[in-house]
Image 1 (spheres, rainbow over the protein chains, first blue to last red):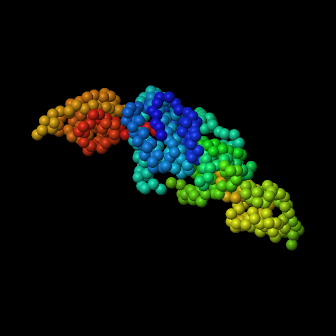
Image 2: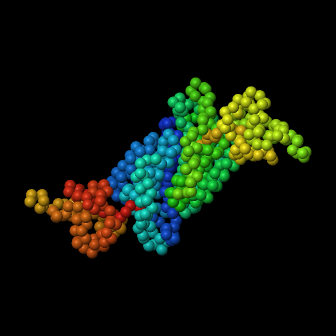
Image 3: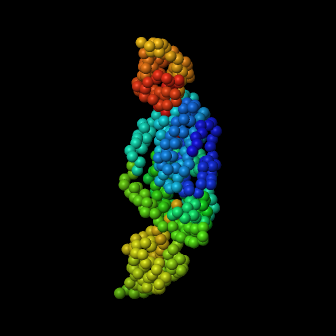
Length: 154
Length: 154
Length: 93
Length: 93
């Protein structure tokens, strides 16, 4: 279990290798990578800047990760979230979950992403091709996604 | 969309890079890796051998992948399945799904794995530490997992 | 009766995993008689060929089949089949 | 009334994203009066401090708050808070 908030990119293979090395109880590794899309609301994107709340970000991510590991019997997990300026095609976030079986790995990965999206204090500001800045609005569907976990686990 | 059946290992970062390069419509990449566990049914595992049905394997995987891409609006996808002798900790299978949003990427990845588990003609034979061989039984829960997709897509 | 209905046909059969181990062969070409119309018929006939075949197919419904590399049920017609395969439930992934 | 109930308190306030841009500051330390008990009270008071604050908090229920780096609701008590933060709904991931 570990969390990083960093400007630099991450390497998925290396992160998975670090998490799984030596633990042959792991039969399933699920990962999610979020990336900067080149278009937003029909307008082309020049770049994006990710602001966060240092200290609270790490604390929230660690708390979400801890909750996920307990709920889905994960053997290991990892969250990396980038901050600062990013361009279309760049990686934003990496979540890796390891478990004995794939059901737990997948559910843990989705749960972690859903909670990260609604609780971790990050804010995206997009810059369009003509230079205008615009703060990204929170998506209602992210709020909807997170409510599905509030029923008893399946 | 592509499928490989191979003896050699795969590199997750390289596979993702190949799939996503130049496509800034991709905002979400989900991956699943299946690995050889060091224990089966309470007994330690020495090694595992994966047999398959050459020709049918590739055809089934391609057909499952095609169905997945159409159903979940994926931008790109990739399946790599290893064959031959494998040891505990070794990778067995890689599935990568790319989409604009995470819901499709996750659902596509799980759907593809569920169908692969019940349709792709692979068979695992385990060798225990004392040298005895044992063909792995199909798990009832894999049959159950696949039935959840037979309702209309959510 | 037409000539085709009475003549025997040659079909290639492949066996995988423990079905292969129990029958003791990975593949063979067999001549099958005109009365064998479905996968189920073929299995019943194969079981008469020797104890190793009988053992391979002894638990009913366990062994799966494919015709020309497509999964089929026991009642699938085998007319026109070039390659028929028998194997246990798959366990990949 | 006790001394603590009548005295003012110093609290550090931080602003993020467009709340920061609208208030025109990333952080400040303010003296708040004894009548300000909750996040909601604090927001109401901040809005009286100038048009830039009023604009930042003008759409009710939009701006979120944290006390000492934990998400809280508008009715959360601020007694004992060292750092209070205001920000838009989060958009990471």
